[in-house]
Length: 201
Image 1 (tube, helix red, strand yellow):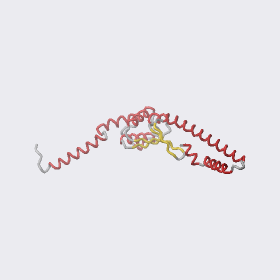
Image 2: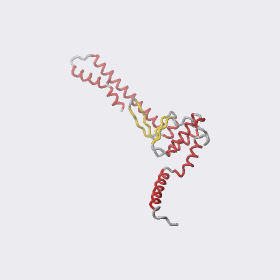
Image 3: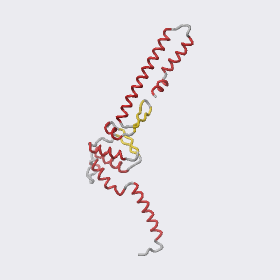
Image 4: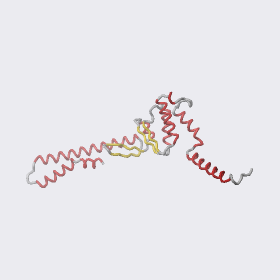
């Protein structure tokens, strides 16, 4: 069968468009979408396909929304308590999924086991500062305990220095006014919030 010359440009455009669409499908692993959907639906214990959303419980709706979000493969996932309404097998599947996820995952959760298994980097918000940590929850907890112990030790030393300076000032050493001024300045420095911040870091 021969193409008519008039139809050749149209067929060329259609072939180019088909090639572009095929690239998009391959980039999003679209040929495996049904398989991925079946696995995710099974792992997340989704209701039957013909179930009406209006009849689903809050937990079922949440699992359907989570499944949809995960299969969309966005660059970033923002998950708020993602393990709520999931059984142990579903949580295990979600952990594996997120481990293989190529984008960024920001999760807010109280599930320590989930954090231990999924987190590779943690940002702690403490006294208005962000403190980054590379590692899982358990390693973060260990370093936080060590950091807090170090802060407590530095604070105890600071308080001891303050007491020492105050005691010296109270004794009212006569004839040492210039030294007294220097010690008062040191006291003010130790008592300042800026000094406390530098000792924390």
